[in-house]
Length: 120
Image (cartoon, rainbow, N blue to C red; front, side):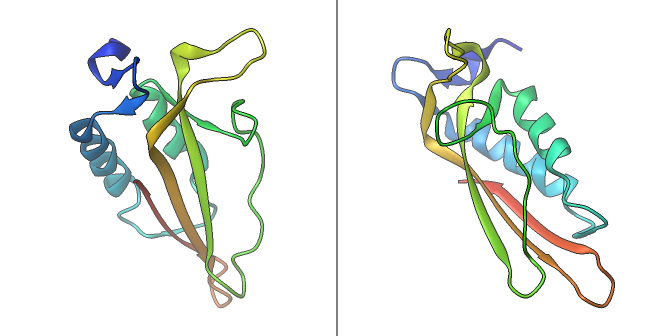
């Protein structure tokens, strides 16, 4: 897949039809709803298939871990960037109209996570 088929590199915008395709794949991944661990890597693999990557606040590739979710539902929003726009400082151009929204809750009885995610 060529990246320019999905992204408008001049305006840093992700095409709505591609958002829909990504969201269908995320929905299929999360259909079981309950997981032994939060499926971050499979989510990130779906993004990568479309030339996208999750970003930290400094616009570098997201490298971290998730906490909480035991007493409250946690919500995390990941900025997205184009994999092809990495510069010499390992930063990426941010896509202005898309982010990965992730909500999770660890159920005390089973220890399993309820996970919801989508590209907004």
